[in-house]
Image (cartoon, rainbow, N blue to C red; front, side, top):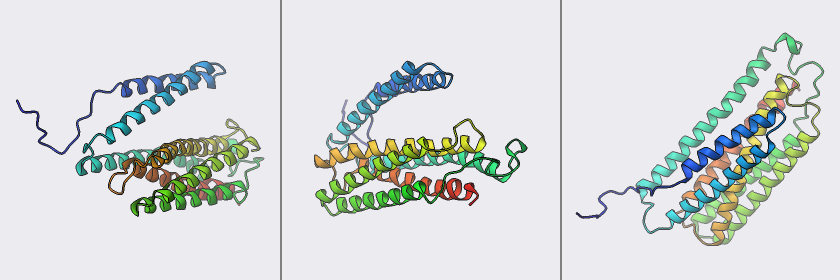
Length: 264
């Protein structure tokens, strides 16, 4: 029988990473639940380490796969792009849940918090202090990653490396500024509905910034190796889309939670 390929699609080889990743995610979730109850830190650390190991192994295999001849045909590239679109769409709905909880409590404040928003006695953060600074940082990072993308299409690999490097640095600065803001906030996670929704929404966004920064670091190393071309840069494109998604979510967080939600 002939083994000649008669279709433009790529059939993936058997991989252990979906199974390993699901186990790692389960251990992480279990460790986080135990940690919230005052114990289970070792389980959480093992889970996080397992997730990082899975990310490294899976990314490595996908990168190797992308460099194997003409596997990534136009239909395959289209499928990968659509997969990223659907993934980002699911992430949008993830944040919608936090915004829904926030607006439900802020538009109809319960009596337990005084019937007003923000809750009585709560010292909210000044939106035009560190939050505004972080907004400028993320907007500038979005400009840098766009510059890198246009440079890639113009075959200017040096500018691609510079643009990615600037974006990574700005992402790291954003994370540090947010960590400082959390450390000096006058309210804790379990104080009231304002603090709970605030930390859930901004905290998960911060986690996405860290993941996006790691994504871009991988792209930076690949760019240094010259692995991206104008017709073959799905990994870079996915990272750029993800980063722009992070930017847009932050704009909604800044306007709705930091600014409007503060009552200023």
